[in-house]
Length: 374
Image 1 (spheres, rainbow, N blue to C red):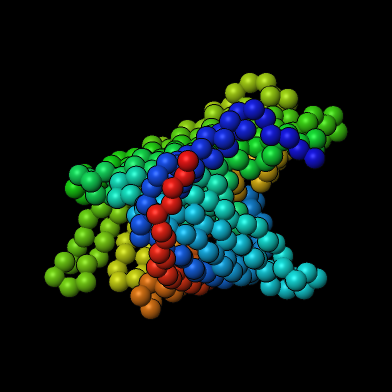
Image 2: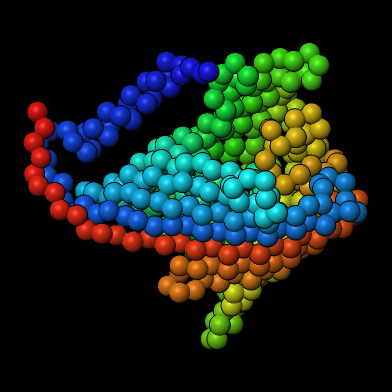
């Protein structure tokens, strides 16, 4: 049993009214309509061997996801899409499907502006791509955002943008009160230099339990960064270099157990070298306080980043990654494979992954007569 509060009802009403205006309000002629059919398929193997490490556990993920979708596009920039996410974990033989969810969203896509509302793929977001915010496993199993996403792109500085998103992950009911996250990111490219930020605010609330002492947690993280990209060996296949330095500032509070704000922070240097479809990168992170302060109490209910970032104060987390990524058959098939050597201040571990993705989309032209609506 659940209920929807007045603010949420108002938001849904505004979205409904917007849809009426866009689709059918007044006397309009809907031109260039198109029925869109497609399917996304992803299979992921992700193996972690962390026996010598303290801040994460060993384990293997091997799973496949199929997402058939159908939608309609009209008036050049508007889309309505319905899709079904069907997930099967390999070896999970007790169920026909391990998990099934829906995607249902409206999208407005113009050259510089994009707006989505509903339940849509997380891949629509451009920012917060660091494992500080969302681990690879989390992105796979939580591949949808339920809420809104808006992005503006700048024509003058190619690749520059600012975006905002809200993901409502926990409906308020009698068992679990609510959980949501607000996210924003921006980037500006000026020749070879770039500057930007990623921002995350998470809110997690549960009815108080005196045994587990679950409470209300506010978790904010801001990571401003600056970087420099350049190429060498331009006469042949270029070798691309990317140097990026970011500061990590967190602000957290457990209202039930701590009552005061905690502010762990850190810094990360990322160096990447890319040649053909092979990339070698190194992440070097150091902390002034554990970044996931209440991880021992709430774990992955509150923190979605890679647990290894929760190193001790003054400790170093390092990840050396070698990967290969390429797209085939007119960009419909993508293959990515890699291995990472990781150090958490106590020991070394490895992580290997292989991901194969298929993205198919087809459009069928439709005709519609002029429709008059009183």
